Amino acid sequence: MKKVMVTGGAGFIGSAVVRQFIEETDVHVVNVDKLTYSGNLESLKSVSECDRYAFERADICDRGAMDAIFERHRPDAIMHLAAESHVDRSISGPAEFISTNIQGTYTLLESARKYADSLGGEQKANFRFHHIATDEVYGSLGDEGFFTEETAYRPNSPYSASKAASDHLVRAWHHTYGLPVVTTNCSNNYGPYHFPEKLIPLMILNATNGKPLPVYGKGDNIRDWLYVEDHARALRLVLEKGKVGETYNIGGNNEKTNLEVVETICAILDELLPEAAPHGRLVSFVKDRPGHDFRYAIDASKICDELGWKPLETFESGIRKTVQWYLENRDWVEHVTSGEYRNWIDRQYGGNP
Image 1 (cartoon, rainbow, N blue to C red):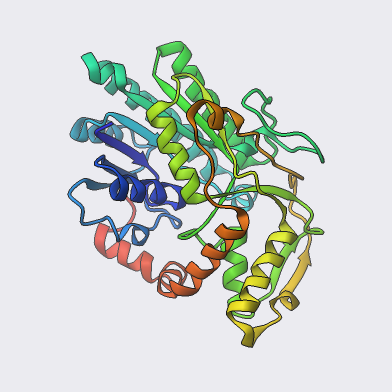
Image 2 (cartoon, rainbow, N blue to C red):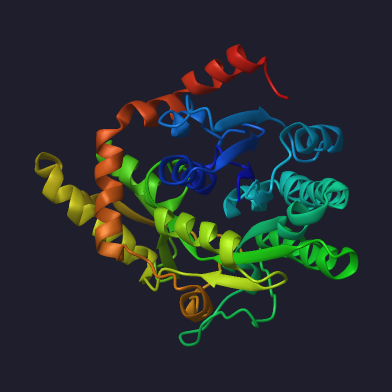
C-alpha cells in the first residue's frame, strides 16, 4: 500500500494507526475526521508536519465530500474507524450512533464502490476497504467460552446494534457488489490518548484529582483488554495480508473484571503518587447501566495462526505505561477536557464541517 485513507484518524485507535504508519513505514496517510468531541488532532502532533500526512475535515455522512476526497487523494486502501463508540452515550442519545455508524458507513461504502469501479489494473486488484468493528456485536458471554469469527451477532446496546448493522452492510457490499473488504472485531482498547470518558482514563484522572471512582454494579463485569498499539499493528497486518471477504477477531487475552482494572490502577498510583495513597478509598459502586453485558472474551487464534500477529503488551505492562502517560501528559488532558481544544478547532476550521 502506498497511500491509505483512515476515517476517524483523529480518534483514539485511528490516531494510533496514523502514527504507526507515518513513524514506521513509508506509507502516505490521509486522515478523514469530522473532529467531534473525541476527535483530537493534538494526538497527531508528532506526525502532523510530515509530507506523507494529510488531513481532511469531513463527515462520512456527506457523500459529496467523500467522493471529492477519494478523487483528490486516490488512495490504495481505506481503513474505516470513524464511529460513535461510547455505550453510555448511545443509551442516552442513540440518534447520533444510527447516523454515523450506519448511515455514515453506507455513504462511505457507496463512495468507495464508485471509486473502486473507476480504478484499473493493479490498483483495482489491490484496493481494500478495511472495516474496523467491535466484539460488542456478539453480545454477552457467560463464565465460559470465547467469541470467534463464527459467533452469531446478538448486540444488546444501541451502540453495538449500530456497529452490527455496519458490519452487515460491509459484508453485503462485498457479496453483492464485489467490493474487496476485510473486517476486524476487537476487544476493549486502552492506552495513551484515550478520551477520558472511558473506564481506564476516567479512573486514572479521577483518582489523580481525588474524585470518586464510580464502578457499575459489583464491578464483576469482565472485559478482554487490548493495548491500542498492539491493535494498531494488527490492523495494519490485516490490511496488508488479510484475505478479502474474511473477518479477523483481535483480542489481548487479558480478561479482567472492571473492579480488578480499577484496583490495578489504584495500586500503580499508590506507587507513583504515594502522598495521595491509598487511592482505593475513592472507589464507589453505582447503579448498573441498562443492558450491561456481563463478559467479553475473544479467541484471536485466527489472526495469530494465519497472519502471525500476537500482542506485545501484557495487561500489567500496558496499564503501567498508560498510567504513566497520563501523569506525564497533563497538558493534553487539560486541553481536551477544558474546552480549550474545541475553541482552537473552531478558530482553525470555522466550526462544524
